[in-house]
Length: 258
Image (cartoon, rainbow, N blue to C red; front, side, top):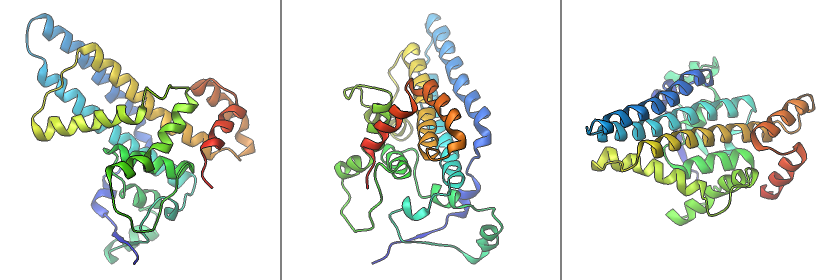
């Protein structure tokens, strides 16, 4: 039986553009500034709990916003087929939206991006695993389990960790998963964030670095066969991953699925 999805026009209209990266970077910097405000409050023996909670919630929102912009850009820039990214067979469009689709206002990237939840580490891992060819979608009906979903989503994070020579015990997947789940606990279960200002600031910096790595690694990988970009790719590989072009793709090829 084919699986059918419906085009979400409202969500498409809310998708950000990659041109908004300046604003996104400003948001990260603002969160780091708020960490200084936490220190000032605590020095005065005043509660900073509300501010800590806000920073964590906002950080998860920035991650989602940036990944939406990145995903649309990647799909449209590299002309990736939706079939290579979705495990369903159809996307149904209302006739009222057809003109927007044919006129280019709704791109393939925007359609696909609405099918992913970038506040969920499993969905993040699946999207980037599919895009980079370290996993591929299955159209066979199978029962969903948290364990199987994590298994499907991990290949991308394993690839990134190998590229950055991050030890297995420092699990990037689990790290990001805990941050995104903590947002849910704060928002829906009135939980509090019990971390110091220094810890929160380091987390903001680390998460920002991770999300940027996701984009750079993907952009480099998908540009591999563009000979005119070789020198540019070598530059960015050295800058972001501290390795040669050959080493980057030797590691990448070990993670590819046929």
